[in-house]
Length: 535
Ligand SMILES: Nc1nc2c(c(=O)[nH]1)N[C@H]1C(S)=C(S)[C@@H](COP(=O)(O)O)O[C@H]1N2
Ligand SMILES: [Mo]
Image (cartoon, rainbow, N blue to C red; front, side, top):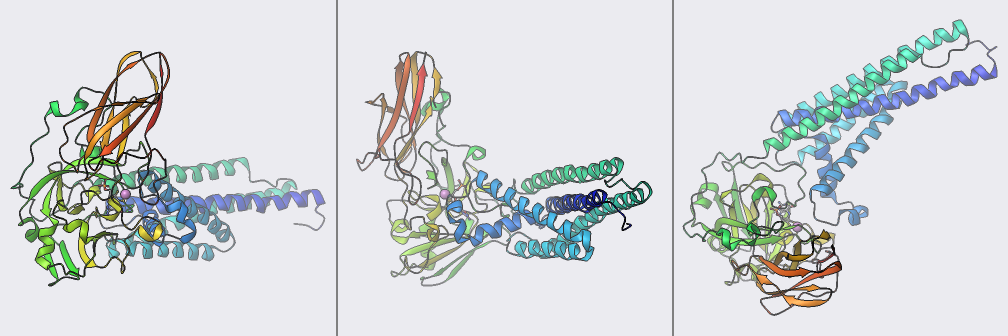
């Protein structure tokens, strides 16, 4: 450009690099999105591959950064997982934007950044139990390659537009913008990459989850139980006549799910074994065949998440089939010094519970292999998990079980304990109003109904208050002290605004406190309360 350029056109020509920088940022962000979605798609197509986003997200969960503790407190449900993965994705796209800027100046720098990015994802995926390192390396290389190709392609279109502008600037002395045609074509390309990335990412994640719906065990199937429980008849389930009431047995596909695994671990029964070690007389390892050769029994047990809020849905009742935990522990011989049993999963997660609780003959803790007569769904711990009546899931219900370690209460803390949750956590007595859940109802006879649970003390009584006047509700016949009951109160609703509350009394005679508390550190307290408008 000549030195005679006027100050005005000089300032205009400075706006070109600024715009080109903005476009380079967009190019880098699109390239990062392309790379991440390529990895998602590859992981969906190649079993044993690993999603870069999930791998990095898993590291974030497992590192539990101390500063993020408050954000992390809460036992990973579907929404937390989605939020974390979207966060990782957003960081990836922002870093990609920065790399786009670098790459516009020196493409090697951008390349180095993308390679570093891919390497971090690869290293993160090494911690994933189901990832195959060879497949992961290939998919990381292909993903980074796809990102760099997109970056080069988009930056190339900015560069050619800029060259066109420079020529125009010389000839006309005033064109300082990317011409419309090339800006449009850049935006179409970048937008196309973005749309393609979202589509590939969604499709890839769908394929990944599909791999994990059906059990993959190539070992023999679980034999029928020798000790069975009677089926629940329709007349024993009040939900058949009360719309909105929770069924006695929660179907597997509606059962709540909580765990720290972003991608469901896939465990094959063929290579699976259960190691029982620590303070035992003889360290013992059971293969899948050996485990399913033990006597099999069934029981209904209600499990709950400590993160369940008053009125929340993180509780479920299922028929579990499996072997008695004590029978397995006896094979190894629990030493008297052992005060804690630790369950450890295929993904390294741990739960610690008092041996006094699991060895108490009054209850039947189990290694469950079936849920409602089907092999455990992968999301619920296939092929084997612990079910311990009376304890919250985070201190007991180890899914994808691989190890039982006997130790002392002092010498080990399970996964959630250092994060501020109670070391010992029996399930608190709770009750929930399922219907009406609020809003408007018609006047006249309205069944107020829900469930109540106090595993494994049992439910003695449920009371319902309408506008503060307590009345006893009728209960479904309890399956056992370890399971929830349904309750119904036949209310004659009169026009106006009403407040409905519920409270349960457990088998020891203790009634739920009305003092509300948050779930942390040992479970939420308080009465479920809804307001309804009748008329
Ligand atoms: N391996 C593993 N097992 C786990 C968890 C986990 O994060 N990893 N979460 C526990 C928690 S907090 C609960 S509440 C129950 C939930 O079991 P569900 O998902 O089958 O309902 O699983 C428990 N078992
Ligand atoms: Mo939980």
